Length: 171
Image 1: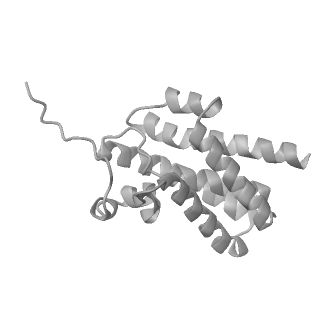
Image 2: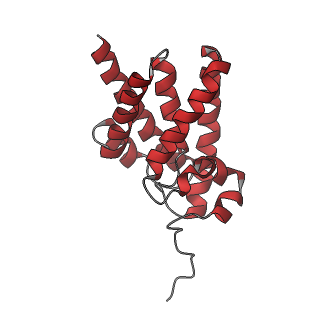
Image 3: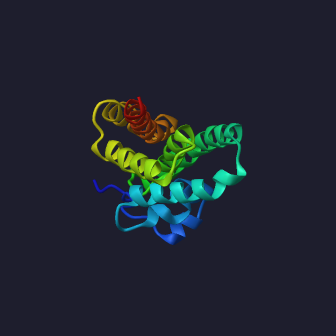
């Protein structure tokens, strides 16, 4: 018997990005459409947005923004993964955005050199997925709210590891 289920969406398009608000959010307003290293492009987008917003935002405002965008991102990542039929597509980059905002917020004030070090560390921990990142990635894989949470959780684990290394370096 032949399956009539649609095939997973290997690479999203601009039409997919614009077809649902969740797609626009989860794909980082287009950063996730990158053909090369969408997670890195999403993290760069997060860094640029942070630099633009930083002069306008207080520490509590950043905390509220990160909390709100985490909850909205949970929904957006859940919906987008279901629509793409891929449990954790590399094109979903909102997880990198919110997690890297958390890193930048918690190391502030930091010069461009410290931010670059944070970027390199975060990308390393997000890419290699060992320890807490591997646990989060495996434990919460799937579709539905649990899978959407898992998409975010492994990047928050990468953020935690980044912050620990920075704290040890500063100590």
